[in-house]
Amino acid sequence: MFQYLLARILQLRVPGTVITGLDLPQFGLTCSADVAEPADVHRVEIAGHVFRVAETVEALRKFDDVTVDLRWVCMRMAYFRRYLDFARQLFPVDPTLMTGFGERHLVINIRAEDVLKGEHPNYTLLPIAWYRHLIESSGLLPVFMGQLADDPYTQELRRCFPAACFVVNANPLDDFNVIRTSANVVLSVSSFAWLAAWLSTSARRIVLPVIGMYNPMDRPDVDLLPVHDPRYEFHLFPREHWTGSPEQLAARMEGPADAGSLHALSWPRFYRAKVTWALARSGRLPAGLSLPGEIYAAFAG
Image (cartoon, rainbow, N blue to C red; front, side, top):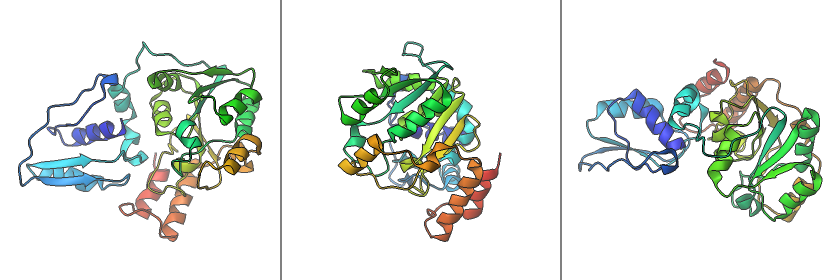
């Protein structure tokens, strides 16, 4: 979905381009017929989250035969932020799927399956004590949904919150729609959950834990912090390298919530600019990004 959205945005900027390799039947979007490439085609390969948008657009306009090969999902707000309404039109809500919960509920998405195995250092679990804080401070009725299986983490969630509603869907698109059509959402570290919440017209409060993939100090190439969007509140966690070890899992289930995560960031735009400055000073700002441009993007409306 990220790739298709980016392809359509490029198509908006360069009318007449053709998108191939598309296969999203769940949204009624199927693969266009492949176009035979000439031997002397000019190829632009996008193989990371950061790419040079202006140069790519220039190549599409300059060359008669050019292929932009989108091999990556390119998860950066700069590419999508101004196209939210357009994205909602591309991916309309499916009324046949399970709908979400209203203003009296706090919908908490859980991603656990591959995370429990420690398959990716930037996909992690959240402390159960943090969920307890959010539930108690909000006074809302908790709804846990997503990857809820017979695993130690889910078992502990059920033990700690016996009165909560636990929703288990066989179809991931039902989960996507529940997130998208709920009023109050707590995100897991998941691009799937992130996109569902971002596309929402129902959400009034979206709690985003700045940890793992969402933490720009851990992933400077990724930017999924919608700091200009008033629906979001950001809770900052320490940097980490998740392995799914028994010690890390026990800390998530039994340990306290980090003190800094208990309160939303007061000035998320300032935080984003500060992190960008720190990355630049340490030489970790990814190639293709400029310090002035990123600072301006953090504060610009």
